[in-house]
Image 1 (cartoon, helix red, strand yellow):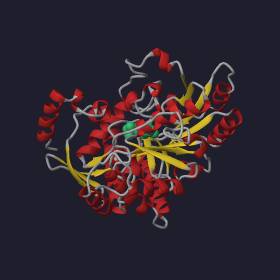
Image 2 (tube, helix red, strand yellow):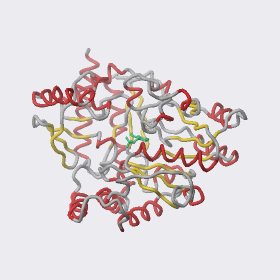
Image 3 (cartoon, helix red, strand yellow):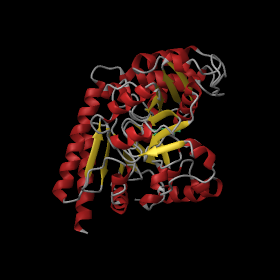
Length: 430
Ligand code: PMP
């Protein structure tokens, strides 16, 4: 594979941008190679600057559920752009998208748009603290909720990939108010939430963990979490930045039938433009300025291009059977991958919920952060490199998910399976 132009650009990028990237996992360090630079994308394909074509399963880390450069989204963005790109004032599209989110997501009665998932989660915990007058945030080991100070405690995503448990620059005074506990452990959950010494404002969870690889909630875990938080007057926040409009039109809360108090959204609701949102019960949301005292603002929030892209995306997700089709083709694909692993003798634990999946290179079940850590990351690096060389773009880390989009055809999934088999066979021969 010729990557001379990418190599040249990466060298130039490193002169001006820390690590040459604007988000750490993009540097591909844990998979032992330099990143390719992308020139364009269409449907399920992306092309790098050297002209290599890849079948894409990163899908911009989730937003591209309809594939890249979706014509209706492009049209909506272009039409919006022709009217001006930002006004810092209210526009009709904000109401349209807000009402679509309220109609779709069971917990959301009111919603505030921001510019990223990080802003959504950061604002949601401020709101929960302001509403309850309490301090402590409970989160789960290996979950990632963006890079705000309070969340950089045993966090997932790039922090696992790079092996850093927290971050310098985050004052001890802040993280002492974050308690991180194991995912899927009902005993520790109950003991923590009932601890009278903890002044708990909220619990925030990825209802399906996606940032330590795909880890589904154990049977009954979300229900227990809902029951305990309701009983104890703790605000329950679902971080649905990945799962929102992904597992079902109403997100994981619809998929599992568990309604949180607040919900964070991002990725899909911006159709590939920078958007986040947080919403929930009106009683809580009314505490936000200007109606209430909890402050949160944004120059570009509710940006007309982003709203247009979000509306055009959500409209297409309303098609009959959209999620049934996406989820069932993903199930079939996952079953094929598991079968390939078995046939080629490569130990893989394949976790999947809806169109999110991770093949962990371990024979043990992966149910939490500790078990995810048993995966063979060297083997993943080898697999990643082989897949990329054969034209398949998967996440450059073992601890991320593979995203299947509506644009992936049976033929595309067949090609990815074929290349996976080739890669596994090559590894088993070593
Ligand atoms: N929450 C979750 C569950 C995420 O997966 C992410 C990003 N991958 C974030 C929050 C942060 O979103 P952003 O990168 O848009 O700030």
